[in-house]
Image (tube, rainbow, N blue to C red):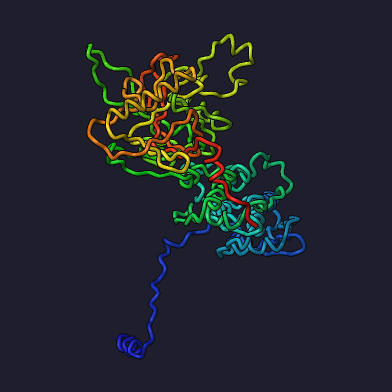
Length: 516
């Protein structure tokens, strides 16, 4: 009969929902901390609440259960009537907030509605020492106001590699502390009432940028619209101390170089971190005498918190802070770039177990210590103030807006041009013992190699200037044996790609007129 009725109802298009009986073991039993059937009065502010012993025992031990337990115990010891002995508990707190707490005690799930509601529930739950409500709120999302816009953020979103500790865990530690640490820094026993807690708020940052950062932290991609947009994302990453996310956002390029058979990563000088640097040594070879050659290798890099292996580093230096002297094969840096190159060389020296500075101790003490000295590559054991550079046949150079030739018709022409460069260097008084960019030996320093004897497409020779200003340059960093250097090894910048100018006219040609 029942089956036929269900079939007829289903046939008529009505689905019958069968709810299985509840398993008593799945229902949590309320401990009998207080008599379940008795009603206990609690006055919160101007409003009187009457809760059963079952409700108060459902989240205990608490301030309420301990208070009424003491009254019942005293009445029983004195032989008094328990009903007459129970007095109203008065607490001078907000009754509106306690309405939600009473719903929680009665078995309803209570979720914070906004930032203000969250901090009030958070403060009162800890003040009343309600363990279940505290545990629930410690798992709830946190409401944070950024740029006058409220965000509801999961607690675990900031726990990724490199993103903690951060601005929020340090600046709003009360919300990120453990349950065992109630009101960090304060003595719970001496508190008359909870301290005033404001919802986390950062009014001076962009809400739109923070929304995109959250999108990235959740694992979704964000399209970088332009350089200004990337700079805004990076600026707020650094403000909030999201170091892992910052490494994901910095301009970079990772690719596999088939010609060199290795992975390469291109990064700007200002984005290099000490923890990402490593040295990859070349395969050991033997000299004619049978002794192994001096250590040589390449500087590699791995973005902290982001990459899982090291890649050969191509360092990009821009801002027209590099002056290249082709006749000396030396580069001079200026401003912040000079200090950054010096610090980079110090880190590399440390990785090679070399002393970080070569200045005599007496000179350091007389001048106030190493910290008072301006950073310069010459203070490191890997270089002079003018850093040695290498221009290879594969280097791509744009000089004064035109491609600069690095290949010549034959060895005779290369030798003639090399002689011109050497003559020019000698006339300036800097040619002694130095290599020109057109010298025909790779030697121990790895300098510009003469082109092979086969014919190449003839190109017009561009007159060589004594100085080039490099707008933007990309360099590999090679560690190799030094020739007449301050130590046995040195760090050499091997040019990959250069955009430079040699005359003021070429610089002016790149200028644009103001608009607007």
